[in-house]
Image (cartoon, rainbow, N blue to C red; front, top):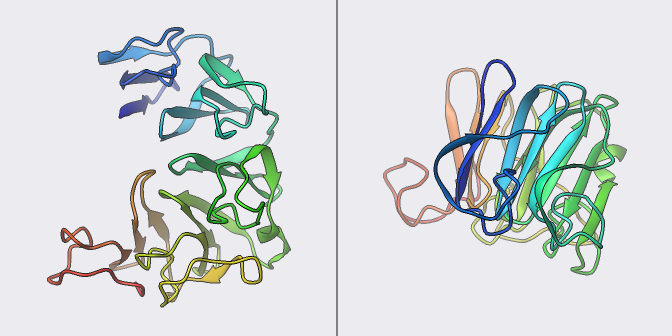
Length: 242
């Protein structure tokens, strides 16, 4: 596990495990305190971390990554196994990004959504017969009408919030984490499903989670794994509807 912080001036700090150079500090030594990441050409505005990898979004819309690229998580192509220093992938104009366990999704300023990395469950909203995508690839979400305002991801699922308060999701759904009212993973014939909730303002989840939260104007709704009361409701058992 590792952590990343971005301060108000756009400086990036990391700490924790560093077996693949995911701390972006030029080595593979673990850290117990935050250290500043050097070598970024512009201030950072956001970041995302997954399993042994880190992605950093700069104010110019470029994305820089460190750590494991075994499955293409960093979008650096098939020849890079890992890197311990920030490397830029080919994306431009990125407005939002999110990372799952071994994959990542991105939203650019033209309302185009991209995915890279592991895709065994179709979590990038397109199907590659379980093979990873090693460079950022536009997904079929771009065929849908509407403006995407947020991307989110957890272990092997992804989520996309539209400006009208609706959301769709893709990928693994064994715990109901897609929020579509089923426990069925998305498939090649139906790669995208709708979340059964309207009026969503924000989506919250994490790279190793199988649980997701949807924030509306006055409430928080959850779906997915709930074997330890993760959803904050007075019941044990996974929920497939927010």
